[in-house]
Length: 371
Image 1 (cartoon, helix red, strand yellow):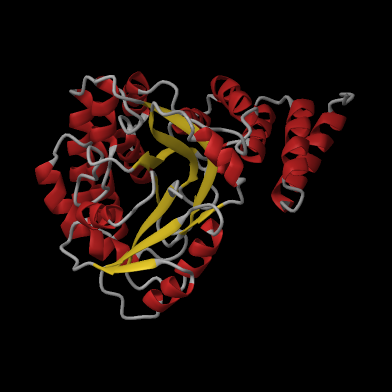
Image 2 (image 1 turned 60 degrees about the vertical axis):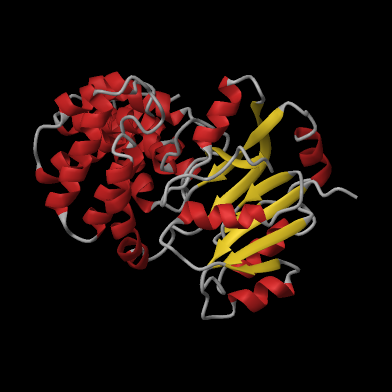
C-alpha cells in the first residue's frame, strides 16, 4: 500500500527531546526519516527504537542541505517536516487524510506555536514529495520560493490543516544556539541580503550576546530593506520593532519610528500594544485606552494570524492596562471593573486584586455605584 505521509527530521544530540517528538507522531505518519548529523548521545538509538529509518549525514553548516537529504529518503506522497524539539498535538489521522485528498494541493499549512506563551501562526510544514520542492538557505531554510513558483505557474495551490505543532526549542537557555547561529547568519545575510528575517535574527543573536551596537547595526540594515521593499510580508516590520524596543530601553523618543513601522504593517498587534504603552508613559491615557480595549477582546487561544504574539498583550494584560488608564483618568468605577476582569482571567495575580480593591475604594469615596 502506498504510504501517505513521511515525517522527516534532522537531528544532532537530541536525546532529551526526540522520544517525545516521535511518540507524538506515532499513528499519524506512515514512516519516520531521521537524518543524524553527528550525534554523540543516544539520539540515534532512541530514533531506531521508535521505528525510524536512520540515515547518517555529514554536517556542512547548511540546514537546507541536511533537510533535503532527509526528504530524499522519504517514500510517501507527503512530507511532514518536524524537529526533535517539537510536538504534534493529538490529531485524527482520518481528518488529516481528508485535508490532503485534493490532488491539486502542493502543500498545507499547520497551526504552529513557536514558543510557550505565544499565539499560533500558519507554517508550511506539509508538502508533497516532489523534486520541484526543495529547501533553500543555509539557516532559516525555506521551501517557500519553490511553493510560490508552483502556485504562480498554476501547477497547484496551498491549503490548510488544523494539525497543530508546539515548538519547545525556545524555552530555556539559548546561549548554545546563539554561538552556533552567529557564523551561519553572518554568512547567509551576504548571500540573501534582502531577507529581513535574517537581519532580525542576526540582530537578536548579537543582542543575546550583549553586543548591542552590532545588534542595532543589523536591525538598521533590515529596516532599510523594509523601507525599500515592494512586498508586505509578515516580517516587514520586525527590525523596526526591535529598533523601537532599543530606543525605549535607552529612554529615547520612539513614536516616530513606531508610526513608520505601523505604516508598513498597520495590523501588527504588537506594534499597537507598544504604541499604547508609550502613550501611557507620556500621560496620554485617553488615547491609549481604545487600543487596550481592542486587544482585550482578542482570544489568544483561537488567534491565527500571519504573526505569532506574546499572549500577555491580550486578555488579562490588556484589561490591566485599561484599569490603569481609567484610574489615571479618575474613572475609578471603570478601573475597578477592568481590574476585576483581569483578576477573573488570572485569579492568582495579587497585583490585579490589590489594584481592583484600590480602584473600588476610590470609586466608593466618590459616591459612585458600581454596576
